[in-house]
Image 1: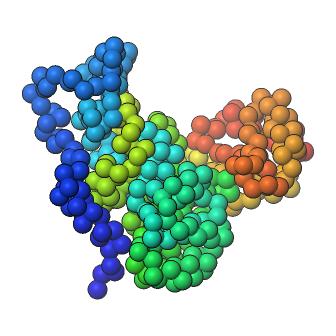
Image 2: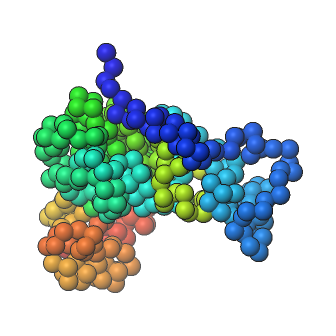
Image 3: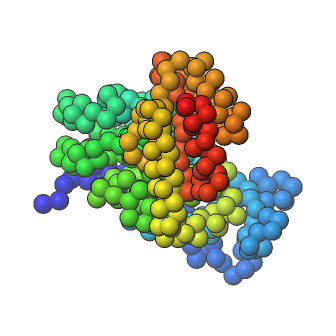
Length: 378
């Protein structure tokens, strides 16, 4: 017997919008392809006509540089749908929807999907964009201690009378470099008819088969998956992936999508090839791992304690904000940039250096970083 679908209400909500004449329908892909002529656009915000021009040096001169308006008005282009289908296929989702940034995706998805009468259980160290989405939703928000799956389970049990229940978490926390028990969270949500929303921003391209993230690595299918193109994919923008009804609902109700100009078609045009490259780049992930291990080994040799024990994020807890800034400046004096992270990004008293490994740190570049470690802490 399959578990209940916590998103089953979306079909009824979409049907109600349609009955009220409020459902915004998306253009068909065939209409976007057209006959090469298409309609004359008389509702664009591209006032000087620059957006209809190709981006200088673009691979495809037929691709316009700008969308011209919100995708609900006149900003929908074939490149958007091709990008979304590539992302969905990579992650095994029904569909996806592009947003202008990770912040817009998180705020838009959480605030549109949840609402008054709902209970949202949120990890205490979730990104500010997830926190803001929870606050804007009007739902009752229960903040669970970081990585405390038991606390999340108890919160779900205690909220059985809620209209709907949601668990919101990151899969790889960017300030601490740690991961929740995704399998346990999935099991709890399935058992208690709650929806699992996972932000995979810092995990995509890095973990899992074909770089498909922590959820894929653990065999977990979230109800809603949020990711970005601005990290491992090396582009810009973000997306929400999940069932087709989630995409339709966000198309209609995610304010950060509805009221934003569509992502540039030139950018969207680059997504499909970058997804294919990322999925197949095992050598890049091997270089990333090699850099991470070399950096961890050197920090361990210098007796510098790293908060995380896995992945490319190597946070070194300093505590005092001024001390963290001083260390950051010392690194810079040796030609290496390591950012000091201070409140409000992290809690008071937990300022840190957020060191990150990348596949680009090889040879002399990696040697410079390791030498700077020795000069700062040796």
